[in-house]
Image (tube, rainbow, N blue to C red; front, side):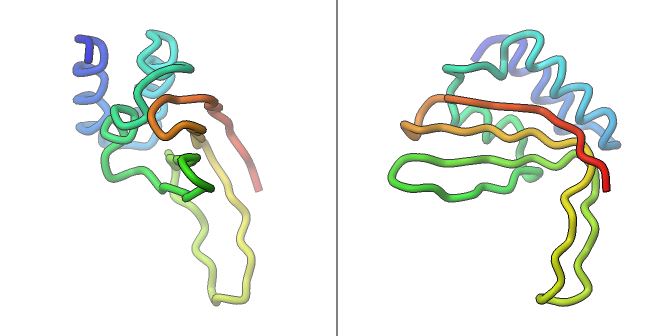
Length: 107
């Protein structure tokens, strides 16, 4: 772990708004804390409690981090759209980041 990781991780964990968390994430991408080949375990720790792991086959895993609140569904039969800024980070070997993307989806 380098100094950038520690500094940005602390900033992310202390952020009070989704805008600040998103901005820290962008800085983490720009400073190559988040990149292809990064430790998947360290990236999971970076995002702390904000992450939503999605299991995959074998050693494949996907991590989704929402920066804004999602719309709650009113019943278990109702589909709800995924909105706002989020990052998706994938691993195919269980240890390193193989793909990531940051995006903004609107209703």
